[in-house]
Structures are given as C-alpha cells and as structure tokens.
Image (cartoon, helix red, strand yellow):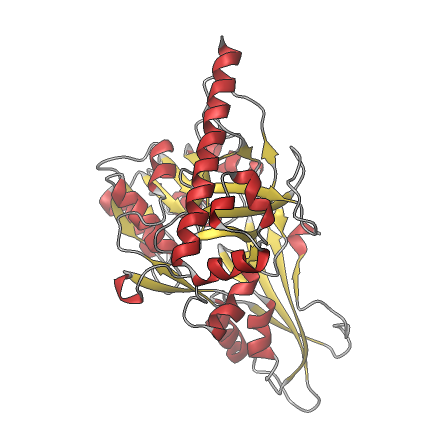
Length: 409
C-alpha cells in the first residue's frame, strides 16, 4: 500500500506541474510581450501547451540575456506583466539586472521554506542579507514576517553590531549566507557572549557538508537551505531530512543538459530552468544559469515529487561570491577604461569556508596603480570589496580569462 500511495502522490505532483505549465504559458502570452514574442518565433500557440512536456517546443531564455534586453527596452525588457506604477519596489541586481517586486505579502514566497525549517510566530531572527539595491534582505524579510517572526535587519552592518543587536533582542534564528553565520557565531564565542541561535535558513552561497557540520555540531544550530533567485523567488527548499531541495509550490522546474536543452536523466547535471505564472513577472523556460540534478529516490512519508540535488555549478558567466554574483562585463566596465591597468584577472578562491575575491592587475608602463582607489571602484560596480594585487608585467597571459572561480578547479 505504501508503494501505491507513493505512486499516487507522484502522479498528483506531475499533474499539478502540468497545470502550472499551461497556466504560466497562457497568462504569459497575454500579459508579457517577451513571452508572446518568443512563442510566436517558435510557432507555439498558448493552447498548444497542456503540460510540462509541451514546454520543450519553446526556447529557453537565459538569465545572461537580461542585461542586454533590459538596456534595449528598459526597465524590464518587455517581461513585466503589470503597470510599473503598481510595483512596490524595483531592485538592481548584479549584471546589471532590474528585478520587480509586487505589492503582495511575501512576494518571493520564502515563507514556505521558513515554515518548513521551523520558523514561526514570535521568534526573533537576525537577517544578515543586505537591505539595499539588491533584493536579498527584503526577500527574506517578507518571508519572515509572513510566518510571524520578529526581524532584526542586520544587512551590511558590522559583525560586532549584528552580534550586539542579536544578543540584546534575544534572537534565536538567523537568515543569510552560511559563511556569515559562522563568522557571527565564532566572533560571539570569542567575546565570551555566545549567540543563542537555534535554527537558521541559509541561501545565496554553497553549504559544504563540513560547514554544515561545524554549524550544527559545533554550535548547535539546526541549519536548513533554501534556493531562490531575484527573478524567480523561491525555487527549492530543504525539509527535515535535508537530502535535497523540494520544488517550491507554484513553479515548474526543468533540469536541462546545457548545449542541447534535453531533459537531464536522474543524477545528470543540468541547468535549472523555471516556469512561473507569477502575475507581475511571469516566466516561461527561464534559464537560471545554475546547475543541479534530479534525485527521484522515494522517501517514506516524504513530500511528493523529485528533489534537486543541491548546487552543482554554473553555466552562465556570473560567479557567486559571498552571496552576490560577479560578472565579467561589470569588471570590464571598471577596469577596461582604466588607463593605469594593462591587464587584469579576478580570481575567486576559498580560505576554509570563506570566499576570497582577488583582482590581480598589471600596471601600464609608467602609470602607477592606486590599489585602494581601484578596489573602491570595483566594489561600487560589483558590490563586493576585492583585494587588489598588483603583479609584475607579464604575469597575466594575454588570453587569461577575466574571471576565474578557483574553488571549482
């Protein structure tokens, strides 16, 4: 009987995914100029799409295409399905990419992940994501408020200030990137006033097993992961089994092999592609640039549907550093016109569980480099402060990649 129940649950999940796919295409074709044009070019009528399998006739829209589309048709490249005046906020993510926020509560739907992770009414939570042009802080804030939590907007405040605020308010929860959580816990312990965090929802950066073990076993924090982007909102989240990301409600997720966009087999890495009937910002086959894989192993008593097997890398040009994407074109915008710089290469490496962002530069003949000033201009462009390292002429090859993720090499 248990096997029969699992099959029924899987069938129900698949049927629900089909309904979401059809609704997203129908709504998007009517309200999104971009989706309407893409369907017309592919020769697909909205009524042709009755389920997930029918989406395969529609080309994928890569996230890396958005900056050019938005520059040609500002501010959203024809993708907004509601009047601009009806929005609550317009964010500016690295790329640069403009992201809309509608007026509804918990617009990005993070509340689902937080509730499953055990956050609830009256819990005081330190939210360490930035409350700025980028949406991370307010995305988590909306989800926390939706489940009844009291939020400390830590944002980009100094670590010591966030520790003081969390201790003063008796915070027992945390949201943000896992590396910042570790720093907060270690600094507070060193000061002799340990934080009382009981649970955390982390996102925006990798959570290696060693880091999760350090947070859970070393500091007693029950750590859950969520997977979300500024464009899509919540995509996946962990349950108490912590063995993969369940697909968020109201989304269709495909995992497609880069190059030919065929559906990936179980365990085969592919790009996460999202279809969403969001009434403000509908998406049809939106390629996130993130790599993952399906895990369809059934779990007794678990949630229906396959799970995403975590973050497996990128197919897009962006590299995530400390929860923020850095793009080669943004570096080129700063360093390309810089007359003191002959060559440059940005390298992302790791020291333990922490990301290190280093920009190596060669000086142009007779032009000394102001490393501190250059670091400030790079930070302004990419929202991450680098270490600028001036290296001897000839160190950086002519064909060197402008941005290297050494963590994956």
